[in-house]
Length: 142
Image (cartoon, rainbow, N blue to C red):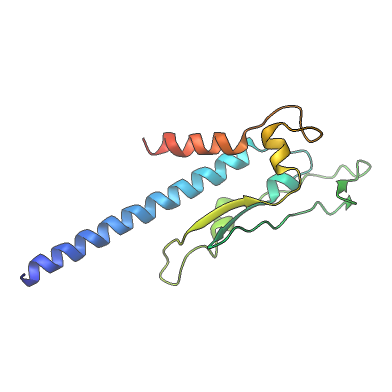
């Protein structure tokens, strides 16, 4: 093979890799923003506990400062916690070349599953946060 053929192949591979990376970022942003839109805000703990991480899930839970024994004190109705923006959430998810690694979006709050599926005592209504976020990703790439 000649040099121009190799250059073409290298250029093609690099372009495809860039497109895949861009689409991965778009899917990550769409999923995270969808979760933010579809998570109910009662104290902000559930919505603030969504984490984006690389290589393995991050189940860190963010508690409201007025929490006692896992429950927000109702006698202190300060503003709810404010979740991270997608830009804040994706920091540290890139490799040393600025490309995204395998990533996860996880929530370790004890009632995340119950709220999503409508399991009592957490919620009488299924919020389907994950389904709605997944649907948004699929509609954004069609």
